[in-house]
Amino acid sequence: MNISLYLLTVLIWGTTWIALKLQLGEVAIPVSIVYRFGLAALILFVMLLASRTLQKVNRRGQLICLAQGVCLFCVNFMCFYTASRWVPTGLVAVVFSTATLWNALNARIFFKQKVARNVLTGGALGLVGLGCLFWPELSGHSASRETLIGLGLALLGTLCFSAGNMLSSLQQKAGLRPLTTNAYGMLYGAAMLCAYCVISGTPFAFEWNARYVGSLLYLVIPGSVIGFTAYLTLVGRMGPERAAYCTVLFPVVALNVSAFAEGYQWTLPALMGLVLVMIGNVLVFRKPNAVAPVGAKLA
Image 1: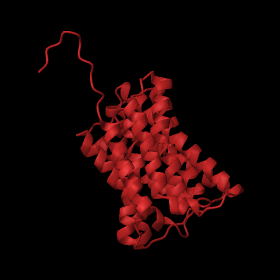
Image 2: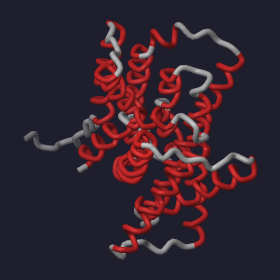
Image 3: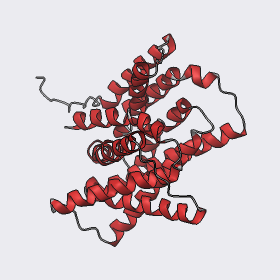
Image 4: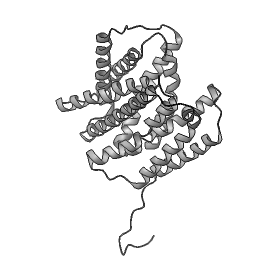
């Protein structure tokens, strides 16, 4: 079950970049995010109410849902969208992939979870591999004030994503399922961005064409309703540090799609990077060998 959820998350989030690219146009970025998570929240609530599986959430749980909405469905998306204006998407992907290590560190700090050596080693290999994959893009980008701002925003977005992972883990430990907490979190995130748009005077435009509507529906249903539910379920089952390795793998899927759709050319450094990412993936999911007690019989 975990492997199925993991592959589902990687495949979905590895292809949402196409839909995100198709969203760019007349509609402002924060408005598109409001549409995405507002619709996703509506779908989740309808599903949960129709199936009578919407869980009751007390005041403490609602406050955590609010914080989760800020971290996962509001601030981090604004940070990544804005950062992509100033730095290459490959560099943003490399920064985002540090979520594996941030999750391991935060799980240690907040939940006193011991971080397995294989998780840290696999995460580090994955980051090096991702750096190789995007090396041509990264090496050709000169540093500037905008670059530093973009990197700072990408890091802030990654930290928000990691914080949202911790909050989801906390909710699941309290018995709340991701479907319920995601519904409330997406609603809160969309509401806060909506308020921001109203205060800033951002117009609520909409493009009634197949490109925009189709990409929005893809981001709403597979990208948000299914993708976030699958991923945060993994956070509860596998732990934040292992689940976050999705952030290393989905750029690899994106590159393969790009090779088919946009003519991306694989290079030797890119292939070496792919190998490192795969090795890192094996290490992250490898269970540490248990030490047999003294006197135990050999099988």
